[in-house]
Image: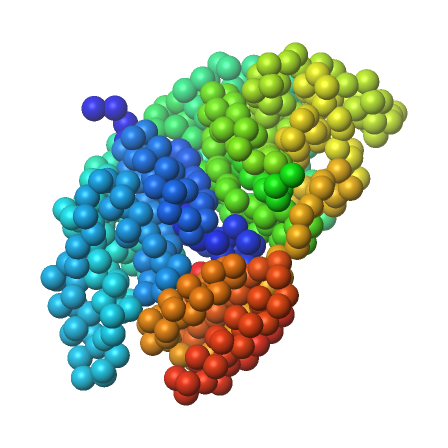
Amino acid sequence: MSAPTAALLIIGNEILSGRTQDANLAFIARHLAGLGIPLREVRVVPDVEAEIVAALNALRDRYSYVFTTGGIGPTHDDITAECVAKAFGVPLLRHPEAVRRLEAHYADTGLLNEARLRMANVPEGGILIDNPVSTAPGFQIGNVFVMAGVPKIMQAMLTGITSRLVGGPVTLTRSVASAIPEGSFADPLRLLAAKHEGVDIGSYPAFRQGKVSTALVLRTADVAALDAATADVVAMLRDLGGVPEVVEGYGEEKGG
Amino acid sequence: MSAPTAALLIIGNEILSGRTQDANLAFIARHLAGLGIPLREVRVVPDVEAEIVAALNALRDRYSYVFTTGGIGPTHDDITAECVAKAFGVPLLRHPEAVRRLEAHYADTGLLNEARLRMANVPEGGILIDNPVSTAPGFQIGNVFVMAGVPKIMQAMLTGITSRLVGGPVTLTRSVASAIPEGSFADPLRLLAAKHEGVDIGSYPAFRQGKVSTALVLRTADVAALDAATADVVAMLRDLGGVPEVVEGYGEEKGG
């Protein structure tokens, strides 16, 4: 079996209009990376059935896992479950266990109306994803995992389905920061990257205390290859007069 | 001519790995919305030529404008210009005016090496996009606008090309906040949304001071339709015992 891959489908007009800043992509990317499942593509689509169905079918054919966020609430603009059913060509059914959970959650409140019961609609064959925050579940069907858009709920759902995912080798990450601007090492770095072709090397400018700095990020599942490439990067930066700082992971940089 | 549309292609392993939180989508979405150019789709792809070329060709065929961010620096992982040239089937040329700007910027520093000169490579027929922050330009070719990934530079580039974009009717936005949870108004809201079918109505839960609240966001270019739908939404929330607050735009809510 080849190494697993993932895609994320973000569903919602509020992201495309700029009203809401997405807060899920980076969390999902890091969580999946920790499981050895690299995120390879993200799409953001509006609350439009044809767009959701087309994007979902394109992604689920191509990647081992597809995660969706958004559109599973009780209102008219929450159409994800219907769209996933259409994408899979199966009927949308009211899931008995989901109904039971909503009934228990809303017991004696008189609040369990038809709109809230819609949150128990699941495509035929779907398996529930627990929602420990606000009860209304997500669901899995095939290789597609349908989650809420509210970050706190999404994070709880993703954590809860970890055991359903089969990961591959975990990518190790190391960051080398220095004050050398990237244009000054780009030529030797090109040769270095070609020499260490199994290591993904990214170069990211950043600004620290108003000064240009650069982070070189090295990523591979092979620790020996990572050590060798890191040593060469450090030597290259020292040759240019830099004082490279090496940290495991991404360090503190949050540049654009 | 039909109303203009836009797509955004975010290029970069650092977004897909979760290292960097994208800070460009929401800015671009709001800027374009102000010009009457709704953002309809976003894709995030890795620094892989085939992925970039395929996504760019899919998007530029479908939307009036395509904006890209990332991959136009001097290092080996900056491959956007080559990929755009391939997508358009034109050669990549060293742009004389871009070279002149870099020569002026780096005059007497001795820093203008081959790597930095790569930032003057532009697909044949490309028109420069000014970079008032760090000189190295972006470029436009056809309906595609290639911009930097660093937010400060991207924002300056986008502002600078505003006069090249032909907008349509500007969508007006109004938000109605209340403490009524969305499940309690979802049934009447469905009827209301069907009645005002020219108005896009989104419902977004949020948490204010630890309490559930909801924002209903109404969007349309037709002010009379907006007024009518807003009045109905306010009446609906009052019927349910709510104290709706109406603001122009998106208000203070920044929910997930």
